[in-house]
Length: 166
Image (cartoon, rainbow, N blue to C red; front, side, top):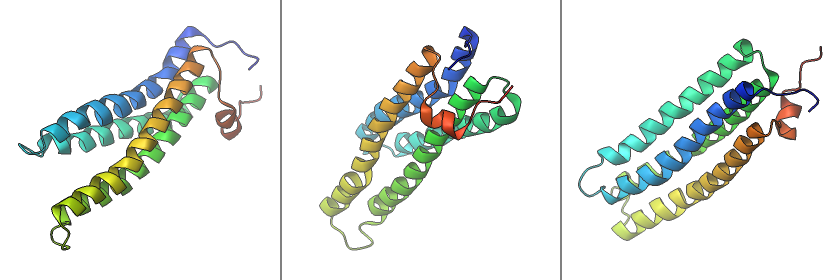
């Protein structure tokens, strides 16, 4: 990039990447593990994980949409749209895999599945691909946050949201 990026712009650009990383790491790894360990006592912690996630993803998507019209810095807009694209991808994955896993976990016995089969389908087919995608998104978001720190825009984001011509 030929233009200089200020420290304030770099900090604003990292904001949604940090929110998405918080959702991916703290909510979907740490809180999920706590919720699974408490699943026999109560399903409330397990149900809090998707509620918190959808709230954070909604926050990211709303702020990224507002940035298209209200944010003056192309650098910040570009990074926020990148974070929003990954949040939409994660939300779609989360809803599809979450719906499948919940349907199998809570409805497996009604479909005639044994407890072992229900858990194998829920955690193997449902949650394993989700966790692999989660890992990939964590790596991509750490890279995007690092690029914010050095004032760089990924080529894919620059191509999708070209810099305004002055």
